Image (cartoon, rainbow, N blue to C red; front, side, top):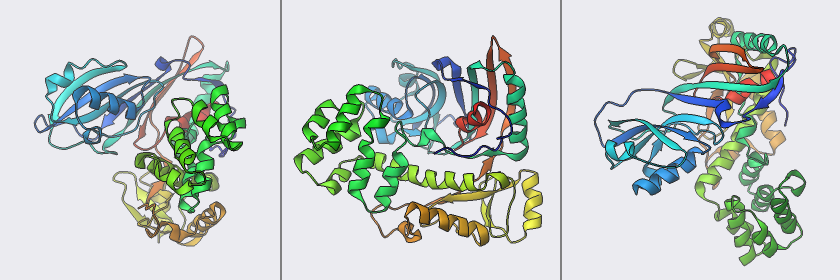
Length: 397
C-alpha cells in the first residue's frame, strides 16, 4: 500500500538506495554505558550483510551459549554496515574480543550487571548515500527536510516491516481473525509477485494442490514456508497444525506486522494534521514516552508546537489506552475495515497482544545534506523505533 507523503508538494530526487553495503551505515546510540562489572559482557559489534537474528545465531554457536540468553536493543537490517550492542552472559571479555566470525567485527567489550533488553537505546545515527539522483537533488532534499524538521517525520513503519512479499501484515491479520487457512495461504504468497523462478514454481505448485512439488522446489531461505508445507503434506487440510509449526518468534513478527499496518493506516489518515492535537487524543511526551488523554487542546497544541508532545496512534492490544472523540472514531473505522472487532485484542484468543500507543510523528535531528561525486550524502539521528526509510521515501518519492 502506498501511503501519502508529508512533503507531497516537493518533487522527489529519485536515486538508488543501498547500491552497496557501504551506502548505508547505522550506529546505535546507547541509552546508558556498561558499568564495567557484572555477569554480562556488553559487546559493540559491527556487522555487514547480516540480520540481527543471524548475528545472534552465529554468536551463540561460536560461544556455546543459548541464543535466547543473548540480549540486544534493536533489530538491524541485513543490508548495510551496522554497529549495535549485544549482551552475552557466562563469557569473558577476552573471549568476545577474540571472536572471528565472518561479517562481524568486535569494536569494544565491557561488563555490565543486566541483560540488554529490546528498546534499551536512545536512537540511531544514520549515514546514507543515494546514487543516481537528480541534478538539483540537494536543493529538493533540503526543502523536504526543512518541512520534516518543522512538522515532524511521519512515523510510518513502512515496507521493511512487511516482508519481502509484503505479506507479513496480512498473515498476522488472518491469525487474529482465527483463519489458519487464510494465514497459510497469505504466507505462501502469490506466484505473480515472485521474481525468483524456483520460488515462484514452488508457490504455483502449492496453489495447484501439488504439496510434494511445493516442498521440493521451495528455496532453502524460505524455512518457515517449507516447514508449513511439510506439515500440510503429512496432513492435508491441517491448517491449524500448519500454523502451530511456525516458530513462536516468527508468529510474533506477523502479529507485530499486523499492528504496524493498522498504525500506518492511522498515520496516513492524519497526515495533513500530523503536527496537530485534537481533544480526545492520546498524546505522548517525547522525553519519556508517557501518554495521557488530551482534555485541554489549546495547551496541548502549544506543547506540540515546541515538539514536547505529539498525538499518538494505536498499536492495538488489550492494555492500550483508548482515545475519545474523532481519534476514537477513526481507530474504530480502521479496525472495521480490517475485519477485526476491538475485542480481538482482549486476551481471550490464542494470540495475545498487550498493545501500546506510538507517536504519529518523531523529531529528525542533526541533519546534514551534501553532494559528493553526483551522489547525495545524508546524515541524521532518529529516536528508537523509527525508520530511516521513512525519511528516504519523503526525499526520493
